[in-house]
Image (cartoon, rainbow, N blue to C red; front, side):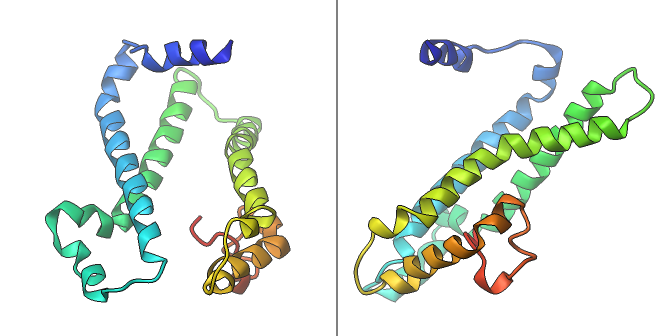
Length: 176
């Protein structure tokens, strides 16, 4: 069964020179992911009706909530680390080899596309079909209804990762 095997792989600590070299990056990646998840969870409270706007405005003034206002830094760190690990994998692959072939670059691009796209496609399918059934109320159309309609129209731009270049006025899932 997959679950016990994957659980064992998840809790196993591999010890190798490469892992020890990148140990600090794993810590940064963990805390960065924690910041992103916490910020996104907290932001869900700010998209609904707010009774006291002064409380909302003063949220980021507390030191314990400083991570809510550091979203740009967290996203930039994610992009940096993703690029770093991609290049690190390339360098490991080409260690001892002299040339980088076009075939390898194309295959690396396809592999990365196939790794990232299924999760994005799942979210797009949810947004363009089931999302409208989970919400109702006075703010439905301004928040969810427009997203649903844009997703039905421009889903393909996200799957090509061109959503910020094609029909920007009707961008689907602007968060990504």
